[in-house]
Length: 275
Image 1 (cartoon, rainbow, N blue to C red):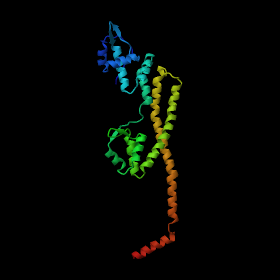
Image 2 (image 1 turned 180 degrees about the vertical axis):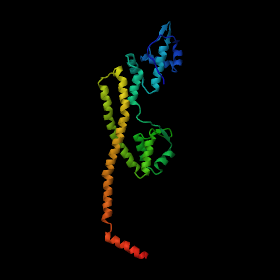
Image 3 (image 1 turned 90 degrees about the vertical axis):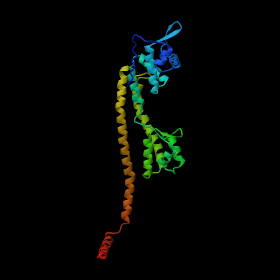
């Protein structure tokens, strides 16, 4: 794990801008750009040459690391400003990770047109593909398509093979996604309320780690609660619709069943025939 120490110590190493860029595995253009944005302190001037030190190198490595993790330069600017005001960058990154990291493991998968034909069936209408693209279950990827969550896509296909029409299943997915988004917005609102009490600023350093730990603790509990409630809702729906339908079927069978006396006669007749 990469660790960055931003506390200043006496610098011993010195670099020209070319040497600094090379040591940080970046470009001179990036060094000057970060300096213009205030992400990097200006060098010490010796005549007409700017001299950088190991503090500049540490800062450049930090910026490069954060960029590789998907942070924008604006995000990095705010993080560095927070660190300079007394925050611990590892705790800040821990809080950001607790809030924004994926809630489940996803492995994307590429499909060519032949694989999609096998997946959906050769007679599937083009509207099925269009709907899957619109929902983000598939996205164009070169000459084929990519699914960021192939498990859901495969699950839908398996359910379709069991007898449910794929177009109806995709319609259900649209409604389900909208309902879950509303529920998720309300859930995330609880976290937002926790942060709102700090106004537009960051929580104080002593609260950052506590809030991150709280969010990490709550995340699996929310998923477990959702799974439990979805299971309960499905059981109620099955009881409400399927049980009612079965009751009517059974009632119909009983209504048209022969009388007991007639069944006895049939049984007796079969025995006589056997004799």
